[in-house]
Length: 137
Length: 379
Image (cartoon, rainbow over all chains, first blue to last red; front, side):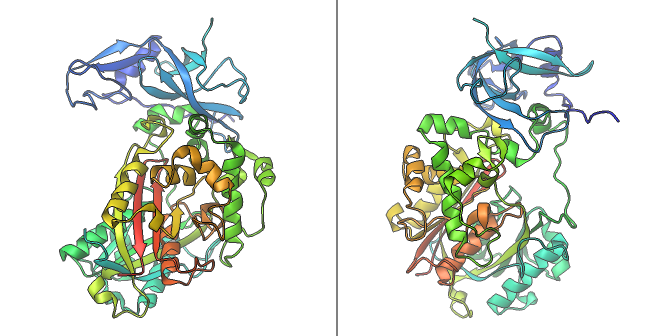
């Protein structure tokens, strides 16, 4: 029997650009043309000033570790515990949930405010997830 | 809303709490409702307003045989019942109905007649949280904790003391699920669930329910029980995604709801005799004490570690034992309200002597929603 699979996102019209971006190796955010607010998750208007004039841009992919848990039980399908569920604060401002790869999943290795950079994990032809690893240098 | 214009005149939990394998979820609602109606000395036909969460008002109204003229199906998680109290008080004052029944029940442990919670893959949670391994509240609710600790200088031992102190309260309560004393070492050595939290810092999973009956203060004096008046109320929501909270060192929903209730009540923190802060996990009382303005967040951990919230302390907190030791069926807010009402009636198993004002603060989802009710037994 196949291992149960990791929960897979299903894009909507408002989020498709984000998932097209990760598939192309880009982390896409949105910025309001009227007030310059950068926001996430995606939506076709600014949640700060309500303007519908917003633009998609490629984020730097750099950020820092804002907070996390190391989940032991129950583990989500497709995950081998213990694994960290992290909140990354992007240099552009917004925060997003992700995982930390290429790093021991321990409190000692996972230091708050450590610098991170985006990596991309392909799940299938349609979906690639943004992941983060400790920044080099 | 006017202070003390509306009162709780009926309050009861299900006949049993804990593991109830012989009742479905809607029957648990009915059991609590019938107990509350008996407590108030009413007939089913006296009820003209109904509010409930998760189960729909039409489901519970039909099952009980009630024909309401006012309905509230607000369902924002475990604090839904605080919001129901607030909405019901406003509705009674506005003349939309006279006697409101609020019910909660959950077959949280036995899972009989209960729909499993699900996250659609095309929801925002399904796209931007579920793929990263969140799986139930223990993997989500503690996500802000490490940031909170770093910002405010809170220690693992201080948060462990929340569970220790609440077990002291539970030991005084015959209906509490867990009554044996525990130490900080017991908490910090219990099995890891989601670092930084271990088993004894996570709520219980049980079956049970509760119900409340509200009417105008003018009518309340004619009921058999001592009326418990609604002095102040507040509510708010923030986000269904814990990752998108404005900040992790505070809860915006708490900071809106709590101060609204204090302002409406016209009281200062020093006037408060008794506090309930919904404790699905051990960090919530710290957030609550800080965001409701009892003290700066930096002092919350030491305040609890110093014993101020334990039996005999200056600010009795979660006196039924809380979600950590009393019971937690999934939406615990109703049980916090029940304990505040017992304290105001003077009949709690661990009664706070001469308590006159009780603050009852609830959370819904993972800091997604909040409701605060301030009660008094003096008009």
